[in-house]
Length: 379
Image 1 (cartoon, rainbow, N blue to C red):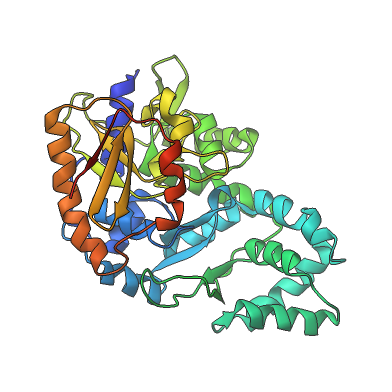
Image 2: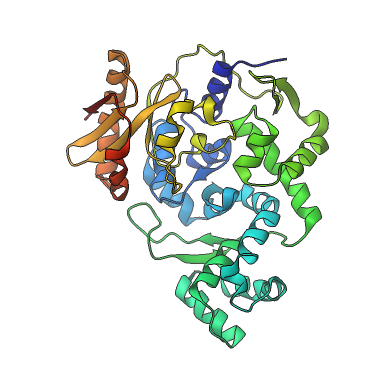
């Protein structure tokens, strides 16, 4: 069985709820799309606005407040919003990556605290964070517990390793500069190779549900784990997965029954927020981002800009300005595409007006450095 490039694109859009806005609840939607990039607090809200019919941002506020959807350091060592029921398996699957990258970082090891010492400390830290604690309170507690000064950079590494959920801090998008934490519930098992390998099977299957079909390289890039670990997880899942041949013959894997629409199914225009998951979930990002645009969209410092989707593919970028929504296309677009984008913008402006009218304003410095065939004020 094989699958074409257009069919791969449409499979991604269908599973990510981007072929049509669906009348799902916030928690069901987050579960279905697996994980939402969340290092910029507005992005999960923009992601769900693009995916759900009649999305009310207050419903995501409530889900964060009730810890039904949680914000934590997970895949790719970046901030994600995931369904609380997924957190334990995702965190256990990521354990080797997070442990090596955070507790092996010179910014941590130079503090004098060893990984073994961090293991001893971790249970007590999570007990202390059984109720919400600010970053400053946690840092002070660690220094008191260790009886020594603990550098802020070392604390940053430790808290990115620790299974901590971010506690909502209010408007406009639940999270802001002031960070508070609470211990994840239930607590993931740490420093246990068997638990991590079993959990990776869950993560692989969940990833394929939301992003498949995909290759070993895609799965490894999504999580930032070794390909050998992913390959072993796929082999262990065995007949639970299907294998297809990709457009270039690469072996792709999928869950049985996963949506695979025809490649010519209409794909509506969308205004994706920064770091939208479909832009980062693959080794081969060509299924969504044309190869000539990848460096424009993903900047050298890691910023992934707000993008416009036309016929299912990135065609440019957008920004919120005082006059409304401005879009820059990387190539000439037909009148119908501009009309569809304008309709999206007209709906986005009032959505942002209640929270942050000029969302992502701090990233506008990229605008003058982007390729653009045409720029328009959409709304």
